[in-house]
Image 1 (tube, rainbow, N blue to C red):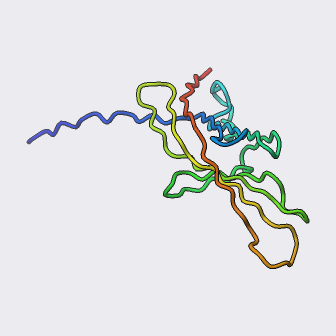
Image 2 (image 1 turned 30 degrees about the horizontal axis):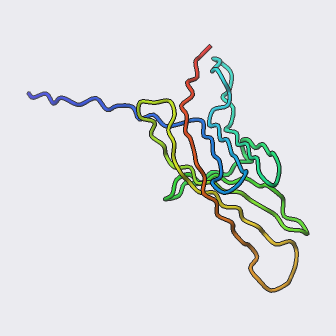
Image 3 (image 1 turned 90 degrees about the vertical axis):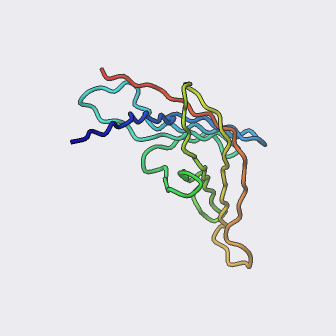
Length: 148
């Protein structure tokens, strides 16, 4: 009978709090995967939150207001900045790559955000949607939560 030694697989730590700032403008975004603070036994963990500050104003989103889709470029986070009405709507999407933290509590990275402008309720010729792509500097942080 032979025994096979198995190597210990190190735990890969990814960020749970992400800060973004636009390279070209005043837009900032904060995405928090676990906004509940200390974990309290018997209490539910809150849904992720996303805060957006840009030309459209200071907006806060949580739970179902944040669409998440897996893509080859990372997780695509999308929020509705302005509902579509007679004057048009605006959505904001941000690519969130997997960020491996290494030995530190903070890790910088670069990503892209896309604003999608939807025309209002008009029947004129032209594209129904137009896009504005922005490059963002990101910082992933690993915030440790403790059970109470």
